[in-house]
Length: 186
Image 1 (tube, rainbow, N blue to C red):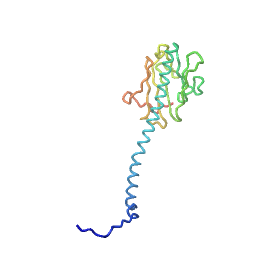
Image 2: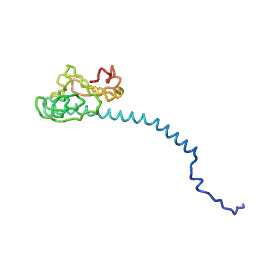
Image 3: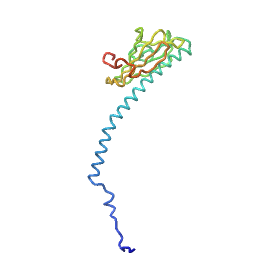
Image 4: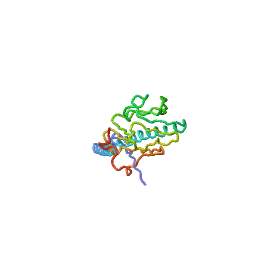
C-alpha cells in the first residue's frame, strides 16, 4: 500500500460557518415551534391561575368547617372588602369569623382584577356561608361560581358545597349551563 506524501490541509474557516440556507431553515423551524408553543403556554398559565383561585376558595371553606368543629361554634365564611368585617363582593376577598362575634379567624386575598366569584345559596343567603359546630353547612347548600377575567368560560368552575359542609369542584359534565355565562357575572 502506497501512501501519498502529501498532507491534506483543512481550512477551518470554511467548516465552521453556516450557509444562508441553513440559517433560514433554522429560523423557519424556530418560528413554527414558537407558533405552536405560545397558545399552549397561555392555556397552561390560565389553567394554573384557575386552579390557584379554586384551591384558595376550597381552603377557605374547609378551614371554616374545621374551625367550627374545633371551636364547637358556628363559623361564618363571608365576602370582605377590607378584611375586618363582612361586606362587599366575594371577589374582593373573604374572611372566616366566629358567627355573632368580632373574632376573625382568617382572611383570604382578593381575586385578580376582572375575575368574578359568586355564591348562590339554596335559601338566597348569598352574602355568607355558615358552618355549624357539627361541621355541616348551617341549613344551606349552594355553589360558588368562579369566572376568570375576559369571560374565559372554559376556565370557569363551580365549587359545590353540600349540606354536610363538604366542597367539591364540578366537572364540566356536571354543569347544565356554563358557569361564566353573561347572566352569571356580577
